[in-house]
Length: 182
Image 1 (cartoon, helix red, strand yellow):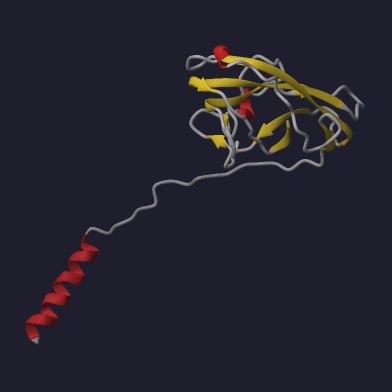
Image 2 (tube, rainbow, N blue to C red):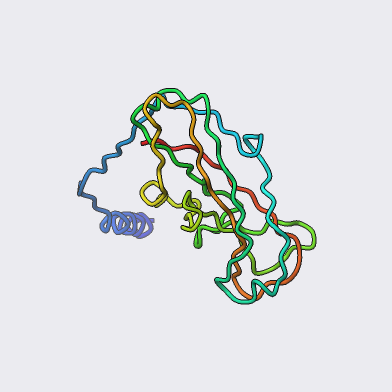
């Protein structure tokens, strides 16, 4: 019994030998909230469907090929608290986003095309947006509100992006967005 108790005591003390800690730094988090707010309308709805053209797979035969660029405009109205501010859409990370590429995954549930994703383009309609990535905070193009303005338009686009030779089928996806101000 003595040996058993000694063994338990020795093993217990060995478990705590390697455990040490030291205060090595402090992490500070900064943020801000704004009273700015806008109503958003895209083709008549806050949550619309944007329809891309039906294309031949011959236009998307290799990785990194793009086609079918389709514009959509976020019309902001009824904006308050926006004097001196600029705004951009922030496209959120979610189940429909390929976090490694920043593109939207094809979520078609029937007859899905393969090797294709959707790529959102910034307000210049040429620069890819890294959907779900915080680099949007510094890389996205912000649009300034004119002094006294309560409305603004943000022109974005979406296009097909091949991850390899595509096969024919349906392409569907979606993304959640927020407006960010600075």
